[in-house]
Length: 430
Image 1 (cartoon, one colour):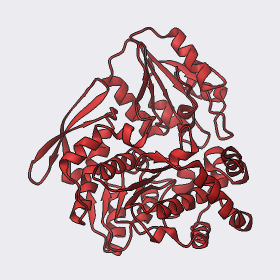
Image 2 (spheres, one colour; image 1 turned 180 degrees about the vertical axis):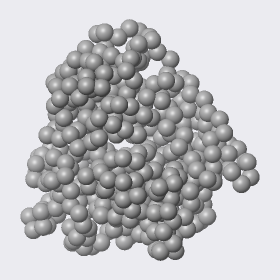
Image 3 (cartoon, helix red, strand yellow; image 1 turned 90 degrees about the vertical axis):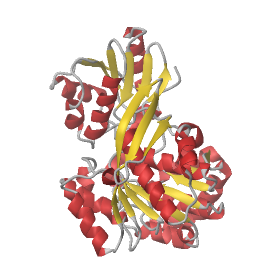
């Protein structure tokens, strides 16, 4: 098969959560274990960092990968979903996986696909682990797909586990309370392996404490150990002063990821780096600062308050649940603009009303849908928005909606495209 034929085979042959939702979710690790056993258990041959969380885990994964790469380590990075190119999910030192490897791997694994009917995600996890093993990475940063305990990635024993935060998302699969969701995320905690929790919450803290105690895993709450003393947002960059709580030692870090919500991820990352240093990884403060200034360049990260056009300013952000939308709204308030235009689409299995209620009433709205079966039809999204006072027209695809917003927007206006990774991924260059 050619590369395109291979991709078409993977997308159509395997159940894909991003397209069809819950039907593609496998609630155990059996398939992943069988796939990796067939491949010679590649997950046992490289060191790793495992990252879970409701929001921020993608940014945190990319930032950590950028730092390790800058420190001179050959660094694998596995994330999901992709924005525009399937190969974005698998990177080594920022470079996407070779198309020939995708073809070769798919040919090798086809007998198992026919035998055990794995999901798309299970196959991509096995592909990532096989790729990292064959390329002999020094370390791989591995982001969970959904949850943690039963996530396909949860067959690694990492150097460090990281859980960014706990919020309301995938409640139909992970549980309908923050404690239940935290229990699923806490499933990545391993015997004796340090775990960094990014944001402390009174309801979830006891869940992490109990799990860490059961497994004798050192437990670090990043936001207790460090805090943001000051920050400035200007010229689409973020300058953040972070203080160590115990000593009040302070450093200023400049991020090329300008979203204010990155301040929380930065605190998490700095504690993760500290834990890696304690374990013998050689990472200097200068290397951390250098990496933070070029995360997008080093890793290809997009869709996090990503400015793609000026006059008017057009921003892409993959925020897609209530917490994510609240962070976007906070960033809008920090951004100089005249009128606000929001292009939005969502998938059916999110807390749509919760996300819509977090949006400002004074914006101009353009409702749309991604071109996947999971997408909520744009007319239904517009009707649900109208019911809570958000008025706007609806459009069949994001680029038509964005053109309408640009036609109405003045040069000093702000246009934000958000609500779904898939919406952001379908935006064409302006």
